[in-house]
Image 1 (cartoon, rainbow, N blue to C red):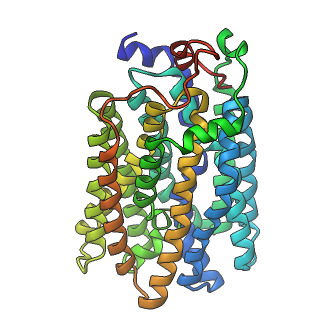
Image 2 (image 1 turned 90 degrees about the horizontal axis):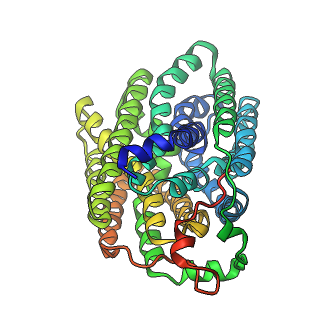
Image 3 (image 1 turned 135 degrees about the vertical axis):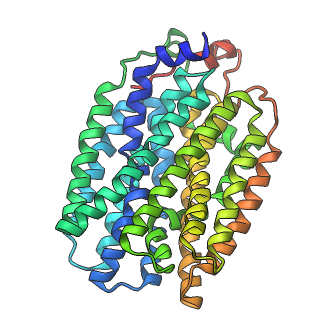
Length: 421
């Protein structure tokens, strides 16, 4: 099937996955930072205390492997429904807060765990199942949706908050997420298990995890993504505060977040299209190396608005590229049967990096009352992580987890479309 023909044939899958991903967990990273300055000011939380919110990511490490396994076993629709209802509930809970940081931490933990049911671990399985020739571009469309929604939502939410307060902002966001998520689940195409999958004996989870955790590609992807995503606390909760250190007004902060959102869009398109045309390892190295410059510039005293805008654009490129790379590299090196299981483990590394990064930013703020040291350390980590991607094989060999002859022909199993809805 041709490149364009594959896109046309699977347009419904693409729209459903994009809408679900766009209104899911990843959207929260673009909107949480908008609320941060208002919450810190009203409840008199210290910046070092607020930075600890990133530690809530640790609880997702327990949930993610189960979510990945559930997606591989029961499909996308039933798995995503949990997050479609859970995220709006947590957003409404945010709007009822009275100032306890412990309550805020608990809600943040809940939204991360429940939101993971709408994460790329779930929705990109549709793309891995339905796309081959245009997989990079299809992943771009799906993973670009949160950035696109975020670029629009940041200034809109800022206006809503300034007009009616942050509580109204949370409730408006909850309604939007609920409507989009339920529509996405309704749009998911019906699917059935292929005959060769129905007739084969399911493998024990222990055997699948052993195959994943003893494979070289997994650890290369895991370590590289860990280093490249240590900056996650900056994206998810600290960006507004960091930009405020540069003496920007709230409208300018919202504008810079929108520039950052545009950077993620450009990063995802450039990375996705390149993955369909060039060898994956060099694409991964280049995509993740450029943002290191953005972090380095933000760490300097160059605080002119054009410099900040350029830096934020480069930082956005990293978040844009990483969304494509994780799913694409897992689909390239691991069998579809264990796609979400493997991707969930990679995301465990990403979430662990976020928690570790939160501890670092809290410590550096406590020591220096500035983001400069954190930004410098992150620039170094991202540069090293991007170089590690070069260790991946340029040509994909047999995929990890492919069936043996006892389970059926490997070429049939690896090409089969698994249940996705």
